[in-house]
Image (cartoon, rainbow, N blue to C red; front, top):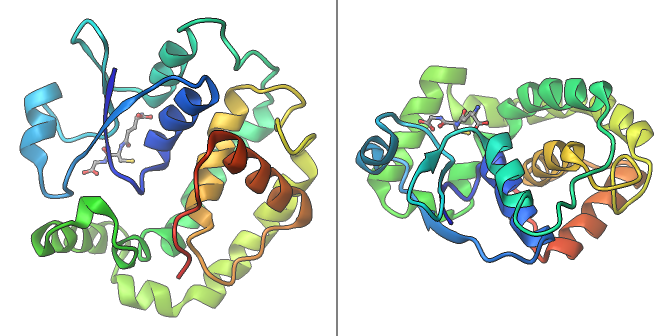
Length: 212
Ligand SMILES: N[C@@H](CCC(=O)N[C@@H](CS)C(=O)NCC(=O)O)C(=O)O
């Protein structure tokens, strides 16, 4: 299996964390942000993540990839799912973007390995959510909007090693979003969220990204 990915990408991290939880080796190829040709060549459109299965066929939906990876050997993401966690995840992803997207080009990530790749991202995101410097300058406001969401998550976490008491697809929804949010210096995770983030990241053997 080979995953075509961006380091910053939380949907890619869903697949990476599943492989890590299962101690499965996942071959990873980081795509430069301006390298649309690679994506078009593989699946006919610009989209990440792309998982190339062992039979050479591509998958395009991150949750399908997670289920596919988990189906190798004994499945582990078998715990219950909760609709309020899925709803929380959708809301959090949207509210975190004005904080996380403007920070990614500052982190020295491999998908920004050339100036052209980095500028490609900056131009695309400016069109999508606005000027990245202006968004960073509004950090206090956006952090203020994210705090109630983190407080809500704090009340949803049952155990630091499994969101719902046993590993489930909800862990795959939540942990990658926390990894992204952790790039925001000054954003404090409440106690249960912090414990969950540290325990889960330790378990899968990943260091957090830089915080700026
Ligand atoms: N439903 C898809 C969504 C994939 C998706 O939205 N990927 C984004 C990156 S996170 C993308 O490819 N955006 C196009 C781009 O970066 O140009 C999944 O869960 O895998």
